[in-house]
Length: 448
Ligand code: FAD
Image 1 (cartoon, protein in one colour):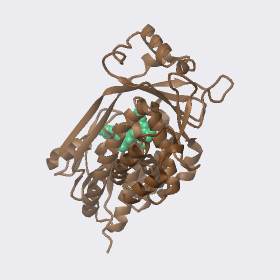
Image 2 (cartoon, protein in one colour; image 1 turned 30 degrees about the vertical axis):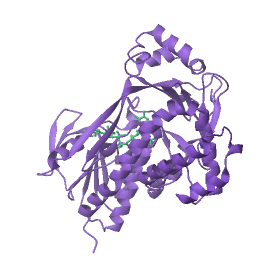
Image 3 (cartoon, rainbow, N blue to C red; image 1 turned 90 degrees about the vertical axis):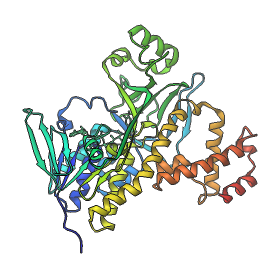
Image 4 (tube, rainbow, N blue to C red; image 1 turned 120 degrees about the vertical axis):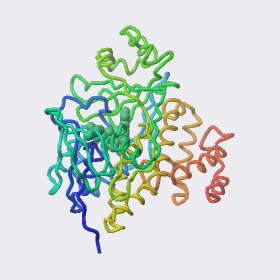
């Protein structure tokens, strides 16, 4: 017999918490969703968080599960590949996948979050409470200390099951780890990021190719740009914190202008407000959160960035968090809403996958800022696509596994190691795909 559905408290109505609220509401749960910020529609800007994000297959599957893709679709801009702005020559296009539908989608964080929160508000039995902050959780007494932003008052509420989706700096995680005596670490990169803008063209429309993710790879650092629906691009500079060049060294207008003139002249030409934006916008940190466990019996769980924040270079933080939500619902179905089992299974299944995508995301920083400029990398990518065409059941490039498929991230990571060895071998003494030994290729692919 199915267990009785316990009321659920979700802390944090960001991307993960709001989608989870919708999904649990659809399964007949009574949900109270708390968020420290005001509704997105009431705020000027989503300060300190990326303005747009890349949505891919894993996120789409979860949004489909919630029946929301028809509403999300008008917000999407397909990006078919990377447009590389090298130091010399014309921009070079590199497709993400070899099939026409293998694209990723740029979407505004604010639009998506607003849509999800609105859906949660509309859902029967889901109550969303804004401007209330979680200060502490007592997992023994099952109580949460909250503060109300409106008047600073404090309140203690009880819960049956608390799910923390309160992001990388999660208070729920801190309380949970302390309660169970677990481990938690946050590893920050020596690089920060800053968001800038390429506005829409004067006559409307896009100043750069619309359907691509633009990258200006420069070895130790890079600039990227993703399109927005209004014709603008959100540009992100990833740069060391210290040294030369660094956020520390770019400390006056002349230094910023000179840096962009020298290193990113083609981007600078499209950024009339560069200097203002540079000094108006904060630099953000880039980190990986690794912790365990993620749960307390049948009454506590952390999910999304709260459990496993990652660096953004594979465009998977939100996608992985959305996959958490769809996986949690799948487990609820499989285990008849028995939360003690669901929580421990969720941790057992998702933790190795979160660790795998964390590793691939870190690796992808080097790929994006540096390796993409190596002709051998381009050749391996071409050969990888050709292997996928010839042996579709045996070879799917790792990037495609992560972005266009839903096999566990840990399988993609392991397959990537085997693929790397095959691609190294096939390209070690050739400079063109025409010279690849396809008999050897077949043997190597079929051996693995
Ligand atoms: P969050 O988005 O951080 O939401 C947490 C929510 O909890 C917030 O609304 C917050 O206000 C609230 N909260 C926090 N503390 C409390 C508290 N104490 N009490 C009450 N409420 C609280 N992912 C992708 O998939 N694709 C991308 O292209 C991509 N690009 C990115 C680019 C950058 C620069 C960065 C930084 C991240 C990027 N990500 C991307 C990752 C993505 O942003 C995160 O994985 C995603 O936001 C996680 O959602 P979340 O709801 O778990 O956490």
